[in-house]
Image (tube, rainbow, N blue to C red; front, side, top):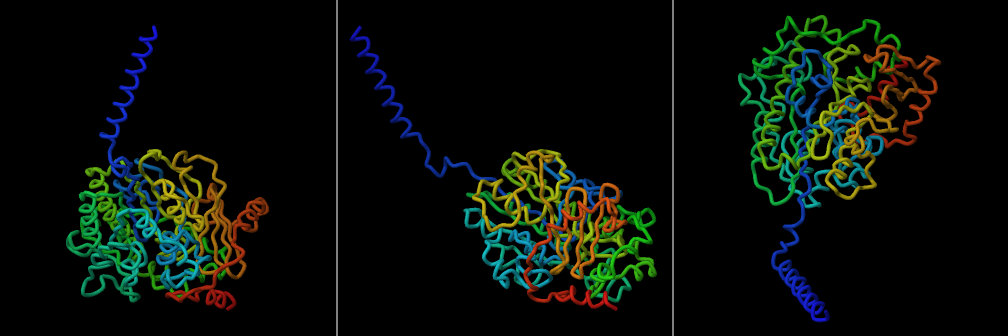
Length: 487
């Protein structure tokens, strides 16, 4: 019996020792054994409102590719920008700081001008420091010269930006050169967004030794609303449906609330559009541009699906702000109402619910902390956004948070799941119940039945606000609107 145990012990030692030798010989190098973190693909679309199929903002909108992405992930149906203007919205998203924190409210200055903003690592820089290959093209930050080159490593260019342009404007609108619409050019190949989509396809075909952060910034449907004829053919002018409109809509809004959306703006006003019979052409051109850019999104999604990265890439599609097409008797962005502040936001990828819809209030500055958590990176306490991961796992999760949009210091919209509260710099206010009034036609600020809700929303207004940095084209709009309201 002693010899038996002796033999068993000897054989056990030999087996264990042999296993150790084998594991030493077969164990891969540490870096090869480490799982690669998820890639990040950001798709930014300029001036896109809720006129996409999945958000049902316009009954005729044809966006099969954006809708396809929605089926792959979670659509946030109540997502808000932090400013209804390009520069502050994009700066807020990339820093995860509110405009009232940084002082970047309007078209300038760039992020380095804010002593607060420069203390935060911009999203592309953070992923670069974490070992990601970072690159991008098109409009990711604002479109002023040098901004994207400064903030996006390996930036490939704007590929023509808002161009190309005809020799003369296509419409009779006498305003800013960018404010034009109609059929131009002859084919897609001349469009910058077409070139940006092709560049993205090439990037997704490359072999990478590390995970990547890839930013894709499309320019349409931003003005000028030019696309080739085939996109207009999707929306015959006689069949185009106008947005819902109430002739008495603005009667319960303060003079300040109306002036802040009208003063110092370059877009056509409602009266000019109606008098010149341009409402349907404007709606048609916007829809045509939306379908055109949707096609470019489809090319990117097709390239991703055909790549080796299809199962390990987080896709985020969003717009920098909304856009009015006659709602509230205005055109363009720059308002605190639903049509100016609400944005598409779709997030898809590994571990994210497919085909989910979430009506909880989400914000563009939530994207940065969400991506940190989704990619397993350490959180940054300086970011003011919240990770949306709980809602990506269960879109119906409890979410006692509000969303905030500002248009200059002192002008705020506070949004919950069913309500919008607006407070202006002169103290006037608005309150809308989206369950009973999705068009925001009836201001309930004086309705006694809503006073507790109004108070809870009012409490979300920041107590302190950074003064305006720079001027942009509307740097002192808040104060000019105040003066106008006194006249």
